[in-house]
Image (tube, rainbow, N blue to C red):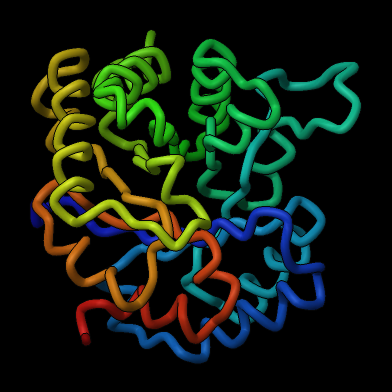
Length: 259
């Protein structure tokens, strides 16, 4: 990992924790982390929408250095979109990062590369940072289609953005077959695909963007494998699922430098 790219470790809570549980989790996490941890690693939590206001208030009142994130948003600013959340609504709650195009959104809710691209642009337009997700299924990997799938998702997701815009965002590579399964890509496999992601950025948006963009790995990240993953040159952080729901395990991941 380049020295200029500060690692970013993000907890994606998915559909877990009501707002009481969320407050407890963030309080415990903050208690377990030291100022040195925040100096060396950017930490974000991405609770369900119903928790965001509670966590915003907690972070603000206790002057926490934990970043508040969201798991999704719509690309329109307002309108007749029952059940959706506009990016400006999140920005008003001091949300700094928004996960866009997670494989569960793509696989379960039919999000396309085009809708993901619209969301990326909307998040940037509202002065937040998108965490653009990409990743292949087990079948695609077995059929040697993994690289083409990820290349396409990254290329389409970033279409129409300037190099400067791309340099400030985060891309999360999550092999779908490793999400919540206990299976993890080897550090070498993760590095190879994260390097591929960076190469796509280099070809489409130039060296400066490629050298600055941060690439996370996600998929059954735990305290036991984070050190090996973070030692890879093109892995700049982690998008953590299940292990981010408990303050102890998530803190241990953030503190990988101490292992």
